[in-house]
Image (cartoon, rainbow, N blue to C red; front, top):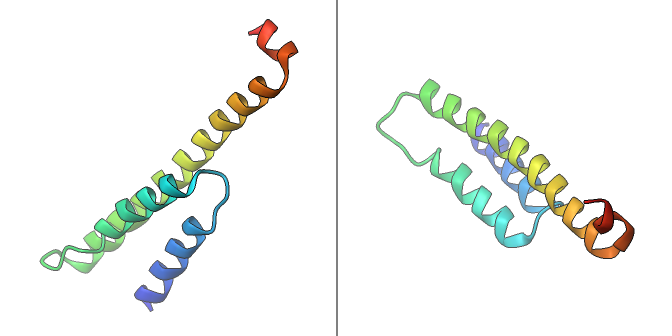
Length: 83
């Protein structure tokens, strides 16, 4: 059950189009590293996974907004004059 949920989380990050593919794969690697520790208790592994997943969601939203802002200013010269 935990593997299924982890796989769905990884798939949702991989299929996202907000960031470039290389950044999505970097975020997936960061998330997968949380599940590698075999000597810790299960609750610590799950807590670390959930915390990392929430951090990834926040980073994706912030980076997506920043990248959209740069894309928007590059296309529209009127916005560049205001900035």
